[in-house]
Image (cartoon, rainbow, N blue to C red):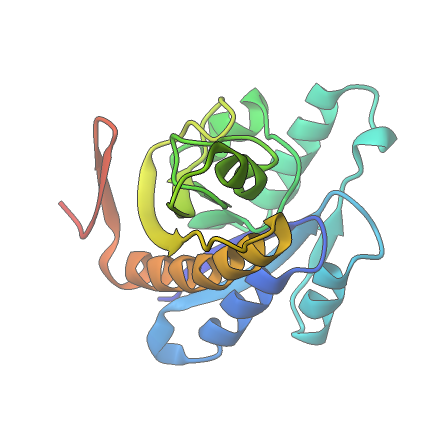
Length: 203
């Protein structure tokens, strides 16, 4: 039985495309069953439609409060009965209603080696700090900002002539590979959580 994925996107959907491509191989063990977004007219939704995957959109401005938006998002995700939710460039923080239903099985990526440089500008902040190595992190989403339990990390060296753009582009390449590899391992092996330590494999 393939692992059921709901993927959340906000823009171009390159991580989504990497997952769709991987899921085309039955050996990968996962299937994208729906794609949700917080805005209309983005390439990520087009990628989903082109792949024959159902989509839904919930814009925050269409709801009376952030809490109502969060509850509606959770309801739409739940309708597809996912085993795992993947935030793939989704630029909104989910709230209590969402985490009540999908806490512990929602993953997100970040373009830095957490817990260093959380927030919206991981690559820029690492470059400005002067670190020699940065990278990407895959973590389990919790109520904080990039504070969840770390599932996987990959490193990227910082070159002397790097700009924010060149560094971020190299991070995004390894971030996609890490995400696809990790989701595939979850599909085939599962994962366990012990305190803040996450391990692939079933207990």
